[in-house]
Image 1 (cartoon, rainbow, N blue to C red):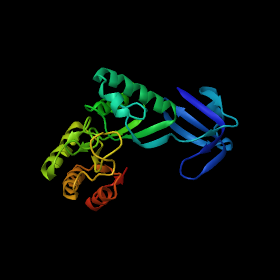
Image 2 (cartoon, rainbow, N blue to C red):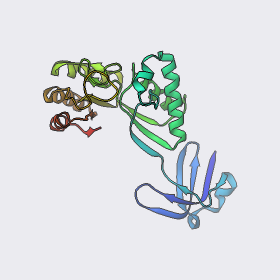
Image 3 (tube, rainbow, N blue to C red):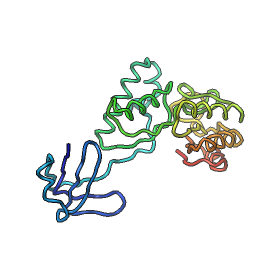
Image 4 (tube, rainbow, N blue to C red):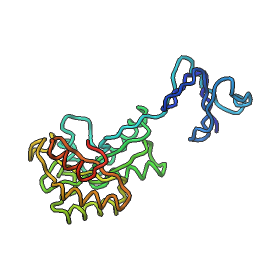
Length: 237
């Protein structure tokens, strides 16, 4: 089935704009884009047509930091901790559908509970439920009692951090998230408190790189941020 959207301003996401253009969608894929003067005349005859006069069409948005299994309350961790896995799965599926409906077609999920974020990603990829493309970190990796310990994989020392990374790789994570400092949603420790050492991070990042995965660091304090950068982190959150 073809769906033709026409008479719209098109922003391509990389700096170019078509003032009067059209987009052809076949099944669930964009197959053709062009200006009104370039549109084959026969398209109208075998496509459903939506006139978007006065509107702008743009690519899907990307959110680089979400927790698809949590709610949006000020203390999302507390609200999530008492939920069963079944409830969290339904919340995550609902969040995914809302995210897609809001125009976000790709998100990077930086930590969830019991790998529900990975299961959700796989269900979306299989076409079982609606949602954006998800790149997921699986469990965030933290020190014992560190930020996000309620949902994360606690690890102490370079050897154990390396093992924790391997566990995320085994589970199918798309990237690895390290909790380098304290945070506001964990009552133990202060938000800027340094948690992982540079040596621990070096071991974890090296292990992630061996698996071809990028790494992200939760970091609010200066020292913890410096450790992450020195160890070779890809992004600081």
